Image (tube, rainbow, N blue to C red; front, side, top):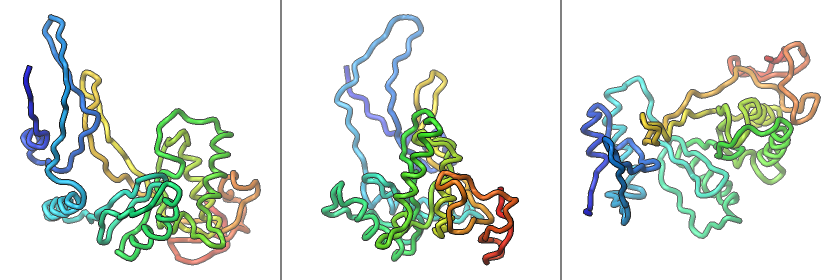
Length: 277
């Protein structure tokens, strides 16, 4: 019987001196016992976490980390970010003067209005960009039947499209669509949602993530990992703001239809030409 105190950051610094020990997260802690033959067991209780910093101090720590990394990677542009994710939907704050949002008296019923009327304007005023994250949800169940994914596409598209009194996607600048599978929805339906927005003159930059927030040890136990931004997903051209034949669930216009009007980001103008497949 006894008390064991461990400091993971000190262990990380010793194991990987070339990495910043502050840039790690603790995920699904595993306590294990190992034996060369005899049966072993143990009791783990009274687990306590004592954090040295919290809240806004983490953002300041990130700034210190950026200052250390900048001269080592001069070709990499660093942008601080923060996920505003008390409830769904989740937004990401990219760049500008990032601070932790003050939810004040916001409730679950007023959360969406808070994002639209307070959080998004605050982020823009601070020089940041807003990403509307994982529009179908953040779970990782098995892929849903295609018909059910089609129904979700129509449902979520209706929620994100603008109305007479509200901006599209809460006023966000980016839409997170780079998922092979999220909440049972495949990549094709994520990109199709992006297409729906474009066809209705809502031009958002698509982005995606490569997340490794968990890993595996040799014995199959979960270990800690990190979250890093993945490649940005962009198309060179975007179809005109109207539905193609077939309604909201239809695919983007075929290349043989020369009558479509498309937006060319390469030329920054409208041009009547065949849309990409």
